[in-house]
Image (tube, rainbow, N blue to C red; front, side, top):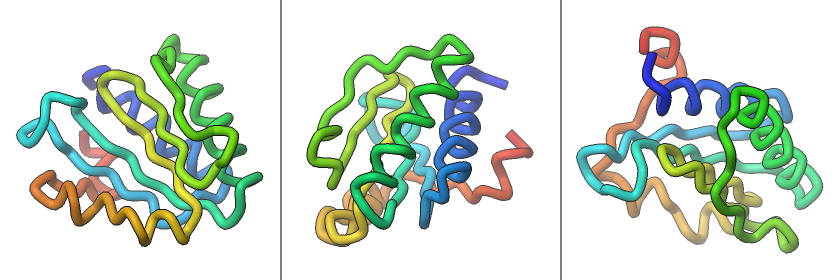
Length: 119
C-alpha cells in the first residue's frame, strides 16, 4: 500500500471514530498537483469538528505523518489540514453546503469507502 492511501485510510477511520458525517474521498492525482487525495467530512457543531481534527492529527501522528499546516481551527466552521499527499477538510454542515468542494473538484474520482480495503 502506498503512503497516500495509508494516510487516507487512517484519516477516514479517525473521522469515523468521532462520528464524522458524509465523509467523501476524492482522488485528485490526475486533476491537480496540490495533493493526491482530498478527504471531506462534516460535523454537527464546532466541538465535534475540532474533535474530529484532533483525532485525525493524533492517529496520523502515531504513524509518523506530520501535519504541515492547519487552518481554521479556532472558528471550526471549516478546518483544513495539509499533509502534503492528502488534504483533510472538516466542515460544519452549513459551510460544507456553501463551499461545495465536491462540485468544485468534480473532475476528481470519488473513492467509495468500500473500495478502500481493496487499495
